[in-house]
Image 1 (tube, rainbow, N blue to C red):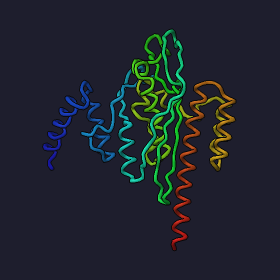
Image 2: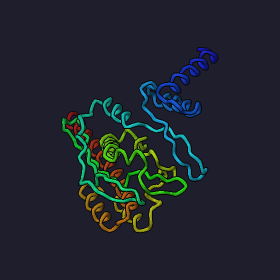
Image 3: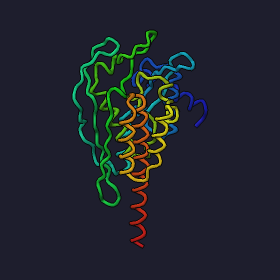
Image 4: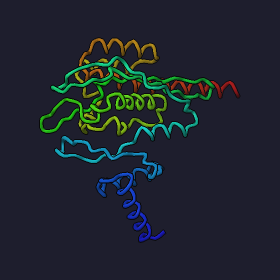
Length: 268
């Protein structure tokens, strides 16, 4: 195919996407969507990714970032042939609170379980619990308000359910990668996205090191419980939860490999 025809086709595709799936998006952002989907082998017309405006604190401006949607996680999990369904979101007690003067009613937590059919025939369950206070996106702005933004105010259950679903999907299917979904990152900043376990304070970092050294699920649960009781700030607890989920995914993946190797060995 000639360069002229390729460019013409791309231009037409950009026009289609700009006037249908991504209305109002800049041409540059739509091009990024196309490039992302081509690199990942995705059908751009299925809208597997979203354009998420995120505040770049270093540049002092908003930036469009391409991120996978929760729908893409479901599609990729289904394509493995091992996705065995998932539970309905289960919510904790509703909490009435004023955050930065703004009244809000939200569920304390949400739990979602994703099921994966292992090659051994076992249906393994992977559960994620996400807390609203640790996930909601703040309004920010010049006032630097910590009140929830419009989406998290309007749909406190729905937004939290998406976060719990994404975390459960990543735990059950670590091959999906570790990228946050658009639903998780909407309204956040690049600085928040880049914060990792090692940017935590010394006490939190010490607990994370203990979590990462765990060799079994029992050890992991004990280490996480001890750390969660010792650290009370929402930021530290969120970091601990992310470290725990990452370690859990690694232990589960190692268990699946060990089970398959044992099965292959006995078959020989």
